[in-house]
Amino acid sequence: MMQAKPKLGYIGLGLMGKPMTLRLLAAGYQVSVWNRSRDKLAPVTEKGAKPAMKNRGQSPISRYLPKSGSDPDFSARRAQ
Image 1 (cartoon, rainbow, N blue to C red):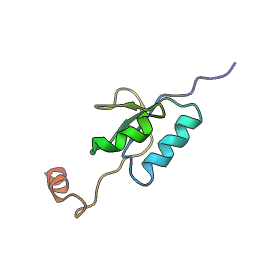
Image 2 (cartoon, rainbow, N blue to C red):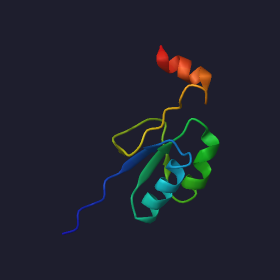
Image 3 (cartoon, rainbow, N blue to C red):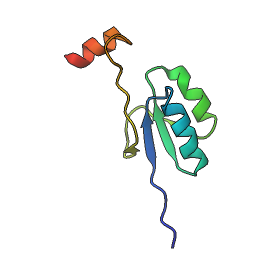
Image 4 (cartoon, rainbow, N blue to C red):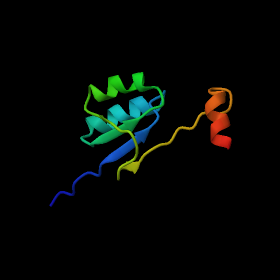
């Protein structure tokens, strides 16, 4: 009996997140995705990824948190 593949969640669709998500989709996984910039969702949702407002029971694959400097406002909020 074949075991069902888990539902996955991927946070961050940058240089690593987008290709990893596309490979997971091609391998038959159900993937929910989240990214701070909503415009980066389109290339992966067109291939079957589901946009997520927050984690709802998926196993997280990766987490991207920007370093200070890439988004100073986000980094300042994160430090609080």
